[in-house]
Every structure is written in structure tokens, then in C-alpha cells.
Image (cartoon, rainbow, N blue to C red):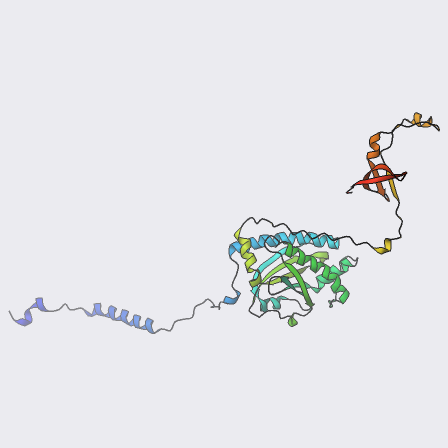
Length: 333
């Protein structure tokens, strides 16, 4: 057999109908490889690591409950001070940069700078002027109405508003007494936030926003603390569900100081003991020379009154032939 007729050694041949689809697929793949990538439809936004949430969910939950207790107590204290309802509720609790904090302040506003001893850092309270003037008007005997035109506080108005500020600081510190004894110290106040620079722009601040509608003047009180100074307290707060309150140290008794102006003031001092009970007819029949029997124990139970107040117990006796009362006990009344 001729070599050209050996079909078993020749390779398989493909028809043109089979080759054309393969060439078309290769061409499509080359076009897809050289096609430019279209931009994604969603907008890509940069992530700011400096403003991340610093509080873990457990810490945030515990701190929020802790601050809500503070807000309820503060509302009662301010209502008692103003003799009017002062509603308060927690609007937000967050960590933001100091720069964003300054951007949220109203201008002008009442900014109080204070320090929490022995913690480091300076904290700030912001009270809108409209709300501050409402509080001042109420403290001066008004209905709590603020003037329509916002104006800066005078020295007298600042002194009056300082009463509310001291209550806010005192109540907030008392709610941390279970963990640490904090002593707030006011450093000063300012009306323009542009002149308040107590931390770097990127410093993380823990901001507590309280919303109130006192005297139909809605406002928002902000308390801002350096997060780094409160971080140990927050961590300790979240460790235990029940913290045993440490007894508050009892202040040392203050010795009494006598006022020499009272040296010549005369105060009536009387001694008496329980009297007899007699029928009205018997009293009408009493005459000179009658004898009334006395219980001997009455002489041991004499009550000494200073002015109109029973002050001492004593017993009856004589000194140098004159009647006298020996003091035996002090009455705590």
C-alpha cells in the first residue's frame, strides 16, 4: 500500500465550520482582557481611624446606665434649686475629636472649664446662653423667661448660674464615688469657643449631651471629658455588675466657737419636774396650810429648760443652804 494512502498515521482534520466558533471565542477573550475597568457605582469614602468608637459594647452599655442614673438625680437637684420642674434626658453619649466638639458649640455660649482632681486634663461644660438666661431669670424670682436677643452674661448672672454649674459638677462626681473620689475645680469660663483650646484637635473627648425643655426654652447641656482620663474609671465600671459603695469619709467635727457678742445676753433658765394631778374640786378647796404630797422620785427627774427648750435632766438638791439642780444628762432634742 502506498504511504500516501495510510489513513491510520494522519492527524484528525477539523472542518471550517468547527474552527470559526473557536476563533470567535478567542477574539472575545482578547477584547475582554483589554477593556478598561469601569469604576464602582458605590462611592469610596476614607475611614478616619482617629474618630473610631473607643467604647466596647459592654462598656458603652454600663456607662450609659450609669449616666442615666446621674441625669435622674441631677434633674431632681436642679428642680429643687429652681423650685420648678427641670426635665432632663440623655440625648447622646459618644466619643468625638476635640475639633468636632468645638464645631458643635453655639457661639456665643457659656463654657465652663473645670478639672477633676486627681485626674489629668481639662473638661468643659457648655450651657447655651438662652438656657442659661432662663435659669438666671428663675433664680432671680422670675418665670424662667429668657430675653429674645441673646446677650453675654454679666458678672452677677454668671455668679447665679454658677449655682447650677456647681450642682452639675457635684452630682456627676458623687456618682463616681463608688470607684474614685473626684473633686471638681472650676478653672474659668468663656463665651466664645474659638478662644478655648485645652486639648489638641485630634484628642478624643467623651461627650455627654443632656436635652432639656426648661420653661419652654429647649436647650442642650454638654459635658465633655478627655477620654484618656476617664478610661480607667470606665474600665473598672464595666468589670463588675455590682460595685460595693465605699463609705464616704466622715468630716471631722468642727469645734464650737463662742461669739463674744453674746457674753452679756441674758437667757432665762428654769427647772421643773412632773406636776401633781388633782381633781378640780380639790384644787378649789385648797387653803393656806394644806400639805400636798410629792413623789420623792420627782426630785431625781428635774428638767432644766434654756429659754423654751428642754436642754438638760438633773436632780434637786441644795448648795450652801440654797436650792440647786445638779445636771445629770444632756437632752438631744
